[in-house]
Structure formats: C-alpha cells, structure tokens
Image 1 (cartoon, each protein chain N blue to C red):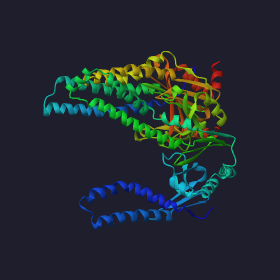
Image 2 (cartoon, rainbow over the protein chains, first blue to last red):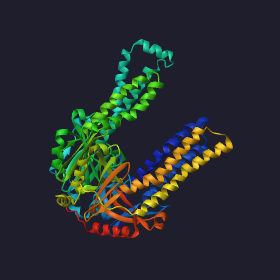
Image 3 (spheres, rainbow over the protein chains, first blue to last red):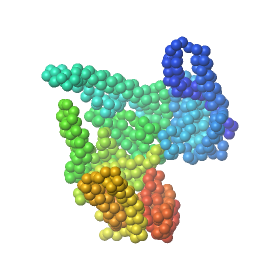
Image 4 (cartoon, chains in turn purple, green):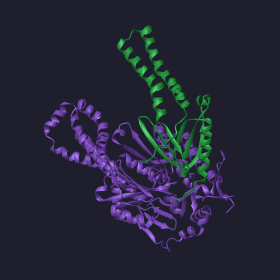
Length: 480
Length: 160
C-alpha cells in the first residue's frame, strides 16, 4: 500500500457542507439584513463568489489530500496553498476509530480518526470519507500484528464473538432520561415550585406586588420550568442518538464498542492500554441502583467524556462485578473498602457548609424573601454527610479502590502497575488530627489524571504508600 | 509506620530561597513607599493606614526572607533508592510523594542564574502523568542523582 491514495470523492461534499455551515450565519445576515431595500446585482455576485470559493476549496482540498504508508509511517500530504505533510510512526498510534455520519452512511463510507498519545482533545488525523474496505485495509496495515484479527472483525455478522453486551431499549431510555444530572434535578425543582405556587397565600403576592415584583414571579418560574423541560428533552434525544445501538464486545485483547444512531462510531481499546476503571453513580441513577462504567486509557475519549471512554452507559450495581469479570478479567474488581474515621466527619461538614455560609448570609440580608436561602444550609449539611459517608479506600492484591463523591458517587479501580505516582498531602489543619488526603496519578489521553480521597487515617495513608512501594517488604524487615 | 525519607537539600538552598524571598519582598516595600509618597506629596493619610501598612509589610518581609524559607528547608526530605524515589516537603501542606523507578520517563537538572551563582541545581523527575522537583542540590550531587536515576530507571523492569 505504498502508492498514494485519495479519500473518497464524497469528502468534497463533506468539506462543502462543513464550510457552508460555518458560512451560514454571515450569509443569512447578509441576505436578510443587507437586502432591506431590494437586492442589487452585487449581492448575488458576492453569494456566488462565496459558494464558488467553498466548492473550489472542497475540490482542491480533496485533490491535494493523499495518504500512504511508507517506512512504517502513515504519511499524509495535504493543502494546496500551505502544503502540510504529517508523518506518524506506526508504533505511536494509540487508536484507530471509525465513525459514520449521515452522509458517510448514504455512500457506505466511514470516517477514520487516528489518535496518538497526548496531543490534546482533537485526533491527530481525521479522514472524513474512506470506503469501508480501504479503511479496514489501512487499519490492518497500521496495526501490523493484528492483521487477521481485524479481518475477522469485518465479518462481524457471521462470526459472533463469545462476549457481547448490548444496551437494551429500556436501558437506553433510562440512560437518556437520567443523564442530565443537575439539569434534571433543577427541572424537577422548578416543576414542583410551579405547583407549590398555588399553595402560597395571596398575601405573599400582594406584598410582592407592593415590592414591584408584580406577577412576574410565577411567570418566571413557569418560564424557567419550561426551559428546563425543553433542555431535558433535548438532552434525552441527544443521549439516545449518541448511545443508541450500544454494543460492547471483547475480541481477544481488544474491547470494541459500537454505538450511535445517526452517527455510528466504532471504538477499539486495547486492553493493555487501560489505565483505570471508573464507576460513576449519578445522583438520579443511584436510587435505582444504576451506574456508568468508564475506562481511562492512553488515547481516545473527547472533551465531552472528560477524556475517558464510556465502557457501558448503564449497569445495575449488582451486575458491575460480573460484567467486568467477564469482559475485563485483567482488572480484579473487589468490594474491600474501609470508610473514613469518625473525626473526618466534621471536616466534611465544614468543607461543604463554609463556602455556602457567606453567600446565604448576604442573600438573607439584602434580597427580599432571601431568608429562604437558609434552606440551603441543611442541604449543604446533608451533602457534606453524603460526601463523608461515600468516601473510602480499599486494597486487594494489586488493585486499589478509591471511592469518593463529587456530585456523583465515584469508584475508581487502579492496578498498582498503572499508578504513575502516589502522594499523601496533609494540611496543617489535618496534621493534628492525624488525617491526610490521598492522591493517585494515572496516565490519561490529556495530560495526567488525578484521583483523591480526602481525610483518610494518616496510618492508612502510610499503608497505602507501603502497598505501592516496591521495597516495602525490605523496609518492614529492617524495622523488625 | 513507614520510614521517612532521610536526605536533606543543600544548606545553600536556604540562602537562595531567602534571596528570592527578599526580591519578592520588594513588592510590598514599593507599595508602602508609594503610600508614603502619597502621604507626603498628594495629601496626608490617616496614621492608622500608615501603621497597618508598615506592620503588614514588615510581616511579609519576615515571612518571606526568614520564616518560610527556613521552615521549608527544614521540612524538605528526599530519598532515592534502587526501586523508588520518595519526597516529603511542605510547610502548610505537607506532601509525601512516592515515584517508582519503573514509572520515571526522564530526569533533568536545571539551574537559574541565582542557583548557578551558588553552584546549585534542581532535579526534575517526570513520569507519564506528573512532574516532581527536588530543589537546590549541589551541582555534584544533582548530576550524580540525575545519572543514577536515569540508569536505575532504565534497569527497573515491570515485574508486577
């Protein structure tokens, strides 16, 4: 495959659409605002020129974009005014992912994204349109050792790999309707508030009218509730489109994820690149016992997923262990988890209460009916309590578990060999109480990632360091 | 109980930190003199303001040139063994870091003009996810440490 190849000609169309999208707003502005007193001939000329430019750009861009493999490198030449050459050594490639938008599907093509480690959020190479066979050929050529594996993958219809997990429609809908997190909670609150509206005595409104607030308050609440409902609806649709048809399977040493309704994506994660597993129980999912599984790996994962990859969008708490045990036996999940000492509780309360006290005080003092904000304080108190209750850590053999809550309850499993560095951090307030904050750094696609549990027992922190330490055994012997 | 790292950084490092602290102290001193300029030339200010300004500036200078560098120096410990690097430092927040040799990607030594004047260097250790610094070691020790870590990191194998 050393001869230079171009993308499929649909790439021209895609580039045209991309630029047309970008030009749409100025164009609409130009047509509607500029054409106030009738259109002059130069209006049409301008629009024509713009269209011609976009089309020309697409055609030339396609013509000058070539790729080939030479010297174990993927070599890409592109551009006609500014020539750009990009050479990527085969070993540096972290992942090759396929996806299909509407247009790609219409022509039976795929979009290929190639990522190397690091390099921020954007993939290093994006080929907007390749014939499926070309894409598979490229992939198998780049993953040198895995020739046969990827070829088998092509006939996924005939051969069913032993391990395969599908997201059912019911699960998809649950995922979608609980995905909004805070937004959804807010919409609930607003909906309830608009109901409560009827129970508030009329005097309240009369005094409000006196305060010039008029009847705007219920209107405002309704408007907010409506907006939240709309946004919730959109987030549901968005999630359904994104995770519809989700299939996770294990094929030898790769995890393969297919997902998406309009835009189909295929992600391949080599097992040895997985750095950690994150299990997140969202606020709305936790009561129903559902959680999301993420994997942290060297490449892949965009901004919207915090640079990690969704391994499975919805799993019952009880099923997590069996699912991971089947699909990722390399990572031994365990339930060993010690919670924090009782004296850490106060620090958790203070941590959530203190930031709220000042704004609540100000609101109570200055804003009419601001005293309602005092209700926030017990809420903060409960948040603090839950943060305390859900924090913990555990170790079993070579896998450490860090458990903490930010908004969602999160469990992170890291194997010792994937920890880049470990740190214990005690502030001067923690020190006298013999507490410490524990921090674990791992590799991720965007710089490093850190996970921490606050206020664990100081001696437990030392135990954790000892567990991580390669010469801990030696140390212990010396002490004896 | 886990053994604490035992090695300290170079005593001259304390001096360098004090000098840096002195330079930082110039900022409040300048601000204070600005206050006095306003007092003398533009319009007289209340004595309270001047007194508070003086006390704050003095406190800042004492903290920066004497107390903080001294405590920081006293608290800094490191240890490099065959298998890992351990650091412990910090006055207000005490940090204790453990970096296995296997995870070390590269080591650098570097020195700014001030460190160079005192024949000191700092050693920077990078893993795939983090970077760590041991500040102010004598040139010889820093070079030796860098070479040693580099060799150990190459030898260390993933045996887990």
